[in-house]
Amino acid sequence: MKSSFWISSLLLSTIIIGGCSAGNTQSENESEKNQAMDHTKMEPEQKMGDMEEMEGHMSHENPAALNDSTEENELAIPPLLEPVDGSYPITAQQGTTEIFEGIQTDTYGYNGSFLGPVIRIKRGDAVTFKTRNELTEPTTFHWHGLDIPGKGDGGPHQVVEPGETKDVKFTVNQEASTLWFHPHQKGITAEQVYKGLAGLIYVEDENSQKLGLPDNYGVNDFPLVFQDRQFDDKNQLNFKAMHNDDGTIGNTLLVNGTLNPKLTVGAEKVRLRLLNGSNARNYTFKLNTGDSFQQIATDGGFLNEPLEMSEITLTPGERAEIIVDFSKQNSNSDIALVNEEDTILLPFKVRDEQTNSAELPESLNDYKVTDEERSLPVAKRLELFGMGMHVTINGKQFDMNRIDFTQKQGETEIWEVYNKPDPMGGMVHPFHIHGTQFKIVTIDGEDPPEILQGWKDTVAIEPGQTVKLAVKFNNKGTYMYHCHLLEHEDNGMMGQVEVN
Ligand code: C2O
Ligand code: CU
Image 1: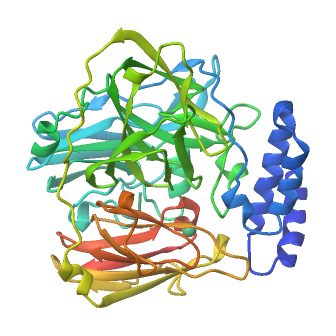
Image 2: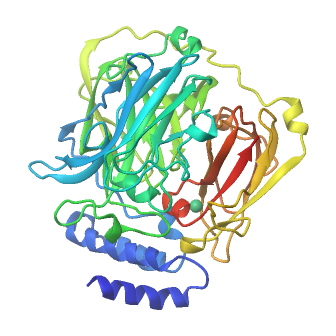
Image 3: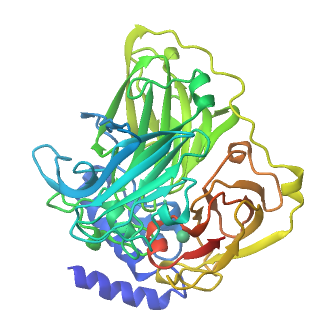
């Protein structure tokens, strides 16, 4: 059965000029197969859609639909990892997890069998991450969004072999933000993340501690890690079978690793820290009630003021913090986070008692793009191009032994990143730079929308778009920049900048 997919894929890919890879077609077959198993999802238009998708890039804009959450399980809240004498033990390990009732699924996790804890660090603190690899394969520990010397960044050069430990020491020197960590092992990042290696990092600072935002962890301040997965008929995560060169997509959503989640909240303002931790799927989050919410933070810090939003799109790697006011809901109303197709991602149960919700502060931060930054000439040009196995940056694929750019520590440079369309359109690439938070100066020559006027480490670039970023590294070392669609990263859509 499998091999016939590959044969038909090969035939198709020779017909399609330079476009969607064979792997892509394979996954549509997979998704068709899965939809066929679920009769409620088998609609004629959808099957037509699948046929059309084979002709172009539509599958990336309209990937296999996600199942609605049936609300069976209360959302898992990851343990909070607080330091002991400044040190945090972080062990990558394998295990089994009961994702489906009564069934053990083989998974990876940090300090547990699946996913990781929330590591809480504070600006100014000297910390040590005591990393340990208990897997049977090499891995690295990468701190996505963290301002850290290159040697501790956990890129593909900093392999931790099975059984080895490595201490990563640094001083926290950045704003309050929600960052995350995951492996970066060359060529197998997508697979290791898919199996469960991902966790969050909360950075706190004086500002975050005095703003009076909801910050009672697991009570009115919740981490939400969104990941789509495809389980096989034994309810296992069979990455190799599901793998797609343009991003492995699944029909099953896990939030913090919980299948069919619901979240019980007080009738108060609740802070949700959203991470798109998926390999490739984009989400547009909104409330099914049509109510708006306030966005308070981007990847790397607070926005200057809360921004009223009715929906928010996150591509892989991106984060946002939002405040939802549940005091306006009554406990009988069905309120849920849904995506653009109105798939129910996370239903909420609102407890009856009225809690007092303080007003949100009007001012949260003092981010700005300076006139000087605006007037800087372009120092580096990057061109993102291609699909599947043929993804490149400036025409090249990743080479561990090649430094693509250099930059001086502490100097701001303008990086101009262009997503060059291919004859079939092209696709959105979430562009990420390690070891820094950057500012988006312009998108196609215009000021970015308000939600992108804040610190970012990952920016979604549409085909044909050019973004100008003001990039400064506070530390020295070698850092990766890459597409955060993890299969593109593994396929070589990555380069290295040496900061000295
Ligand atoms: Cu989430 Cu190279 O990073
Ligand atoms: Cu990409």
